Figure (cartoon, rainbow, N blue to C red):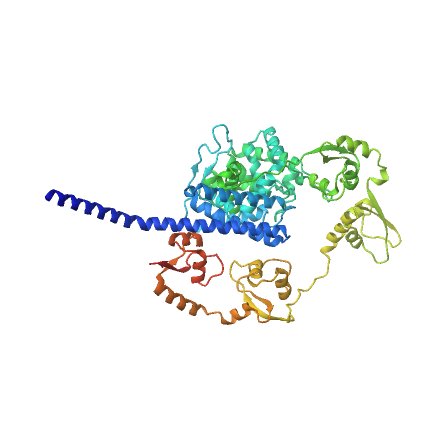
Length: 625
């Protein structure tokens, strides 16, 4: 009997321990399941945005497509960064699918963007991130990355990892994903050519990624300091390494010539410093000033240099980040097919020739010839040069030589004889034809500015009439009269006015979607220009159809005080309310995951429309009891 009692006690104790263990484990399991549920919700939302982007692109809604694709990639990038290696394979496949579709969308976009993709803009954002990190007192110690490129690849420039490098990597993975995706695609244009020249000049091939952060491989890039081209040479340094320029051409825009000049310049800097990080910093900044700081503070490593401009402080870390990402793009969530290389034949011409004539000779287009000859600023080979090496489409050299030999001399370049009217000036004539006063004077051998009515001037113009009009328009644009800003409309028949106060982070597209109107209508109603820029607390007039539901909702919209009271009443009956103070680096997704709630509810509980939060903000969270 006693034996059986002992056995029963043992069973009860075992069951009790098991029950206690389950009670301890259940909260964690519940929390993990809630986090997994939030992740799945986020992925579903990202896929929905992706499909909306495809639909918008199909109907020609470029603004909508851009918005939806960007939302999809932003959500997936943040999810991947937060979950990391803990994410299951199916979720990783979804994120890869979104990344691939996003890259394909960017590849379908034509032209070279000059705003958000500008390398100078990227460096400015990373500089701001670095200042935030410095104010927070983050660790900037250096950690060497071992075997980062694998056993069979030898890296001549060492890669190290610190907080500055991590900041740049995180930027490219999140806010800068669009930028870096496009740069990876463009890298195919010049990678073979640039690496070949770097090898011939005896410098590391990894310097290829320096041109990536300099210009995003845009040969037409131009910085505020008037640095130009893929390698961003200023005029004096360019000329020191053999890159000339005039009104007709700029060899700094020639990727091949500029790469050879950059390789020689970087090699000279390396021989000067004996250290690649210092050489790269010297490329961005004054080498003499870097040497002065090294002597003044008795340091010989880039990471120890004090009092550098913030752009130079972040230049080397951004180069390292770009190299790491570009060498292993899929590891960091980039699934990109580089665009095919820009290939061409070359032919030497000993006279000035219109590119429109060349296009006919090789059965190509004026636009394509301009693309493969970025150094040519105008419509023809430079008339101020005795000869010029012209790039023509690949495998067309024999065709060009045969057809060009048949072109009469008077058709190789088009000239207009302009008869001077009474009261006309050289500047007026130059604006009319899209040339400079200097070129008119040079072609007509005029020393001063005096011209006589009735005489004729020889003006070079392109055969392409539309391009001629474009040049004239661009030339006269700076002289055009001031156009006053249009005024907001005071009445729209059949509609009533609603005043919308812009919240932080809102865009014109967000507001248009909210009220079911077009962005163009909001601009017209408020007298806005074609710019998309609006500011927090700015008031915008939205004209909605009479008796619309949104007008009625606006009138009955509860005040923030009423909203807090109603939410507190709901919290008292349904759950527990906590106040969370936002920390540096927090996002709404982080907070939602921590408490197992949705982002939408957090925004609703706190009367927020935007996802933007900042350190110090207090957020009310209602958790299940």
